[in-house]
Length: 446
Image (tube, rainbow, N blue to C red; front, side, top):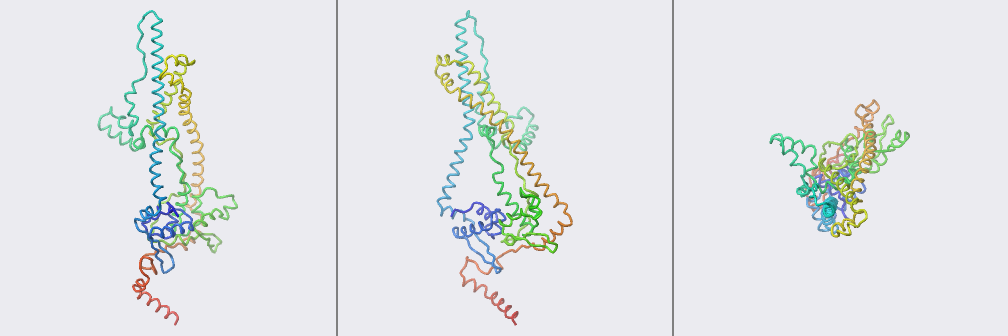
């Protein structure tokens, strides 16, 4: 059984000594799934079980348990190796779009030069001998083209014309606002310009349940529905909201149960999340669950302008070449590079048009998508407002929930059994404790 990476991550974050509730709350996983994962990990990685006198279990893992797992499971080793290989492959895919763009521009420009030189020579031969003027073509930037491969292209040269003091202040400001310039080079920025940088909410459900778990843990395992509602999406119809049916998935996930107050109000208790391996401090949790807005690109504005400009230049040059080689006769006469450019002219033009069309469509799609996300965020935020100014009824529910709040910390002083040492040795070390317990029972019986 391959370990669940969320459980592994939670164990490391919690300093290798955890309870079922610690991991479930931190990872946002279902209790049953978490328990099976912890037991499998303890078995495979040489972990130990510490049983408290209350019957609660603490899982103690060695700090090198990930290395133990890697040595044991070839699939884990293969996953790590493939992750590295895929990182290299995907980087190659990312920069290939920028390389194709630059190659397309260079190819079309070279073909245009060859065609224009041929046409100029033809006019000179057919004319009255007048000297041909110098042909202008925008080659000025080709000498600087290798700057496009620099991760900080457009960054270090933006303020060179300013005094040294102004330049340093400007760079400091630029770092604070467009730090992505130092994170991706121009070729990566081209991919980002076309396709963006992926779904910002790919871990949406994972974050949601982690935040719900932390809210429950921060309130020591006892909450009211109003405290959980800001983290959920669909609360159902009015009937479902009145009866708080939206709490059912939360109860199922973290094995909670409702408690009814004398006034007939419901609060929810999660006993497993009240047991912890160490003293838990209140963790910072957003007041409501926020989906992240989509960004057009993480690339800097100068990189995006350069990518868009080169895309437009590619289309313009392709249209110019197409107008000069309409019937293909000239391409056949010149051959070589011109003939090759003419043979793939359709691909060059299609790539140039798609290079500009895809980001344009994506821009409007992002605007539509972000409006929906903002609407959902606003709706969840509206559910958080009553908690800031609770009504008398809500204050009563919160007060009743606090009566069930608890934190059961299992330290090494209240352990009844551990798999780390031999049972006989444990009984010998706890002889005084066992005698005291028997004495207490005898006295209570008398």
